[in-house]
Amino acid sequence: MSRARLTGIALFAFIPLVLVLYLRRPLGLGPSIALGVAIMVAHRFVARPFMDRWVDRRCFWCGRDLGGGGVDAPFRSKNAIVPARACSEAHAANLTAFARTVARASVVLRVLIVLPVLIYLGNAVLTLVKLPAIAVDDAVWVFKIPVAAAVVALSFAWPLGRTMTNEPGVDFPPHNLFLLGVVNTLWIFRIVGLIWLAQGVWAAI
Image (cartoon, rainbow, N blue to C red; front, top):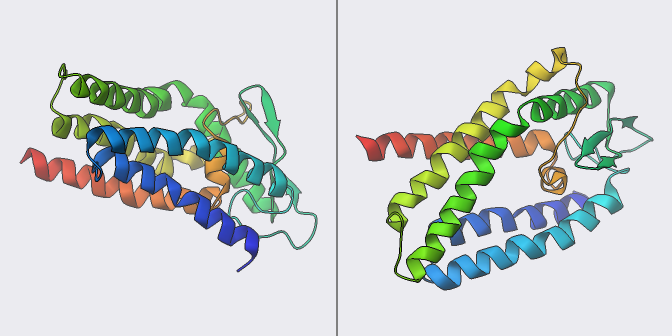
């Protein structure tokens, strides 16, 4: 396995670490949330340069190192164009379909992913000052269920983008998808998301 792929795996590992700090709070509520936020903020300043350095040398879809020139598969990310490449025409088409689906569902994904995270962190801060809106253990489900629903749905629905004609765009941090490759990241999202949904059903019974 190449150094680039090993580095991508190592950088991706910080994402589940942040989730553990947020949801399991192994250091206690305050220190766990503070460390999780610090890692999340700092991660961007390492992962984004990693993506910029390797974006023309790795398949954005599967994470494989490009032996030759690869195939162009650019997409918009906020106000910038990510010059993504793929190892084959098929993977380039998959990446474009995925980015079109994300762009079309951008508002829904923000509501189901970004908003629950902000609510959870806001409630944690209120809990620290003895003014919780909801018990921390209950707030975990406010975080888990909508996020899981969003990522599981996206992991199954992205092929719908093959029939779309809108501009491909990913307004969520693209470097997080690049670390393992989009398809590998989607599989992890699907597995973890299904586990979270099953846990939610079990807790509700």
